[in-house]
Image (cartoon, rainbow, N blue to C red; front, side):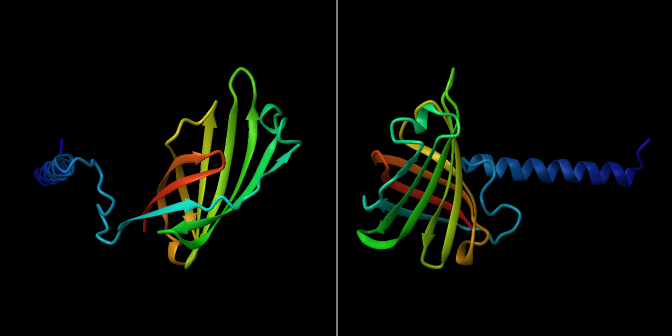
Length: 166
């Protein structure tokens, strides 16, 4: 049997968790980004591709997506509020072609103050918009996590909304 002090501790824990969960649910977000630390903050950065990149395909532009192991490498300049703000480097590899086309992509946003890395697995064609996982960073972004919402406005570019938890 549990002693009275253990029952009290268990009851207090359940009540505390219920209150915290209730508060978070009332705010519309089950786990706020700053829950538990009081130090986390979310920053949203809107970037646009400049359309200056030129992708490289292996084995070729016609075959990369239909060949397991086919790859695409690309870079592009990034703009923020119409002004140069860094660059993006991306690589994708075709993981399967039939019955489902699957691609794994990863890359980095090279920004003033550091870089933000990301990854994304894609089945069939990616409808726009879609999200990619922010997996880390360097410099000012060394504790970065979160996601980037990608809205394609061209085949290899578009609007990027980085939702970064620091």
